[in-house]
Length: 300
Image 1 (cartoon, rainbow, N blue to C red):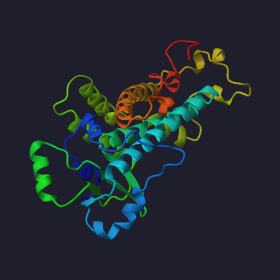
Image 2 (tube, helix red, strand yellow):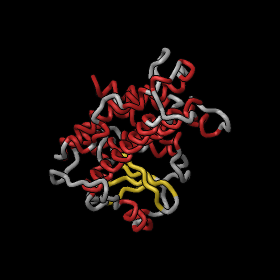
Image 3 (cartoon, rainbow, N blue to C red):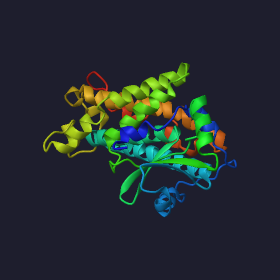
Image 4 (cartoon, rainbow, N blue to C red):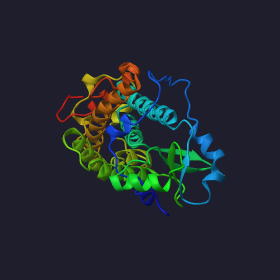
């Protein structure tokens, strides 16, 4: 197994609803983002020899569902935090840099989506390890095969570590493409719409504007950012309104991602017995950062 694409192909059929409903923990589930940290990286490091030299292995993770629920919530909090950072940048007038944070928020949002499907990435021994917390899901035949092959493995997780050591940004989007393809099977309505959204996100070059800002020595989307005075939305004239397709694609995609993730997070919190206000950053279906630009003069 050389690539992350090959690793992603090992993840079997499931949808987010059945993954959420399969989490078995005591409720209300205790979670404090300021203090709770993942135990999985240390577990993987301690189990490195047990996992063996191969590129995939099914092993027992004691407290699998507790670890899964906690790490899923941590990934959501990371996404929310960066989303809020992007909004703060926008609100203080750093519109161009807000786009950089907006892309990073979208990337972390893709990691939340993967986690909702049961797949989380960890850094262990200087490389990325992908852990599938629900390898026992799949088609009827796949479930039977797994039960037969791993009959003695309690609380199973699938460890994936291809030859390529690091899960890069393009690999994260490719993983989303794989999850959308397996998630759409047998789905209708909003679930099917969500899978279509994921496919669109995976195909879009959402990082184009972020890369231009970072890697071009002189490019800057809104030069008004460099003004000496305090930011005043009313002073943003047509000269500073961008209709750049890459800008609009990023912000529109982030808005759609937030709206979809918000719905699944609400479902997750209800299942775990956690108050809906645990993630106030997702209270608004249309986060302020996605309103940085609109078509037409004097609109922000």
